[in-house]
Image (cartoon, rainbow, N blue to C red):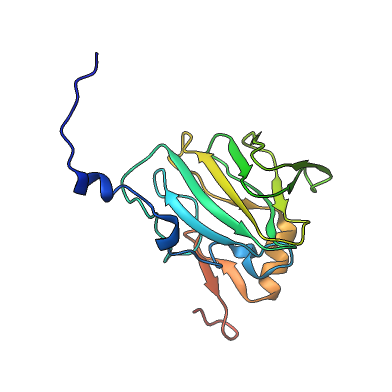
Length: 187
């Protein structure tokens, strides 16, 4: 039998992410300005360095975990463009209040629709994306295994990077979001 440790209510309270108090962001990833990339991310916990490109984004519960977990609020027409998480394990998508289209393949040629509370496990190495084809926002729980890389990263389909560059967004050498404000300048 595992020995119990004494933990105060205050210690547990610091490990609670209360949804109504979460600092969500609409600019967590490079596809945020692209059609089909609109979403609001609420990072709950992170493995290793976490999976996000916005350098200002931090998990609500800042203690180490072996998974990355976020609430994602997806407006009608929004979602995430084709991507993968190299170095991580599987990614799970669980819509909690409406249907969500999941697509995958080298160019997103396959798709299925998840209903409320369905769960899909997308294996590492497979390009995937999701979108809200409905007329109401959909809340989804996204979980990515920390994997061997301790959190992994995002690898975007080349077309996503090309379209993001047209908006001035790019990823710097450390994989974080950056914006060109004029030729040769960074913001």
